[in-house]
Image 1 (cartoon, one colour):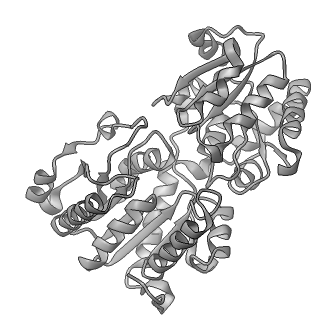
Image 2 (tube, rainbow, N blue to C red; image 1 turned 180 degrees about the vertical axis):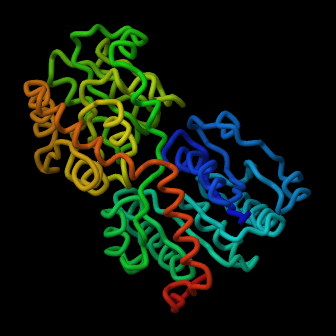
Length: 396
């Protein structure tokens, strides 16, 4: 049995956490034992890996069990926000876990874990160090000087990382364009998603559970309520379609932009089981400025829900390259999204056809298929020097 130390900055109700949990069992079938390390969520809902059957271990217990440890452990000092002293304690804790567990692979996810855990892995001389970009915060998130600084750090880290992965072709293209690494160094690995639950809840049952009448036109928004996701544009789409109601699964700083919808708003917060509700929607609306790969679009296909969204990185991959939906030029704005929703409402055969086409490509997201691809890449990465034989200037 080979060993993977998988590290997440925080186990929030989002894509990276759900993918890590979905991969645990199929990788074990392939001979890979996983110890999952998670930080602590700050002001957002968390997923508990124990609810998915993983054994919770204390830090001391991991040190005692060493290479026999399996399950998950929380490093409370590992947080998303910057805090020099706390980050230093997190770095020491990650190094201690790495030394005790003696992994063959350290695989990191999310920015803070990517910095601290990769450095710990290098200092403990781990043979294969991998990082997955589930999107990136290198543009459109921060002011330019800070964004340039983050890009420089990511470029330095990539220069010493054995295996770089991105969750979509457009994510890889953006990383290459920003100078993080050459495109040929970045492997596109589809996200692992357990889709069966999304196909199991009939539309009528999902609506009845929410108290939404059958004739209503239900528009869905699933994700963090943060500026990059543009919940304000989603709210405006709902406002401009008089018969529409909004079903929102998510929390965040922009929740107030939904308040004007009044009784037309069904806001459930960040729910750990979105499959119970997604099939209640008539259309899923993706108004984001960009995505890595929007898992909710794939989940909507499984639930039988058509999707509309802007033709931007990530959404383009889900609705065109890997699936089928209505892409709207970003310049068309709210009017374009409204027109796309109305078209699906008026042409049910089009909506059904898009979902049928999208469902034909869902096998690539099966956790067993993704686990096989990762195991193959781990094998190829053994003995390979980072950066295709070159070390980036200024690497940590």
